[in-house]
Length: 357
Image (cartoon, rainbow, N blue to C red; front, top):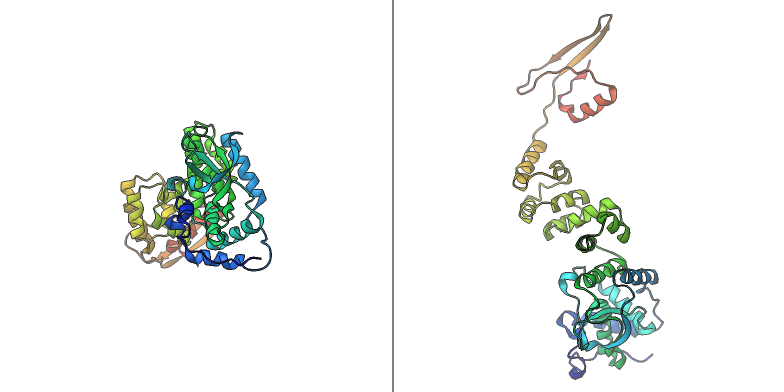
């Protein structure tokens, strides 16, 4: 195997100046060095970076969105533009994953063409819809090897005007959702929200059911993840680190950002139980009042009922005698309940239930 060594990033600028790969956000020398070391080792790549099943599923989804349009071409990478950030709010691919991808592409070639659409009739600009990381890897391999083949990349190309912006955006979201082996909570929420928005714009029927079917999740999960997509980053982190659960995160996501910010400021008091005790339809201006009421109730010292009761079964019925210390704010009450209902009541109001003699 030939020796792989780093090449100065400004080598042959006339060849690479226009490439996406030269963008500052891809100038990670540590990643390039790690890839160079990996390529310099003996042995072929395992192909772990490529999942045929996911690739096939992504291809089928693209065709369900855009039909059979598009042609397969080899493009000069200097003509490529990255996916708009607003459409591609997914977590960055890890360096470990990129190293595996680079090794696989270097040894086996790229197994799945990227997807692009022409941005003008002349074909002088193309926007990437799927394959930003693969294009980045090509840029790194070109810098490391200076092989001309990495200045070009295979792509499924949609002609100018063949795709609407909504179709393009849906392809971006769906392919990311399908092809990633691991999705963060933010990624799932973003994909679900995007899918819902696209289907609603198309006035599709049974939107929640259709999203659940296409993304292979429960219909209730569609509702939850859509709400999570509206979380402010600080609350999102509370969910990510396990401080609150999905149901509470979804409920908070249904409230305005200003309320979420106030809740985050009270994060030391914020618990899943408190959030779920605030009705989902509580008016925004009342959420914090309800929150502090619940905090006060749950933090109040428990008052223990002092006393006992005795039940005597007589011919005339039950005779009940009670001996208890008077307590301010407490009214005595005798209830006749079915056994299973008594257990529920006793659990909820255990501080006020007397023990039997």
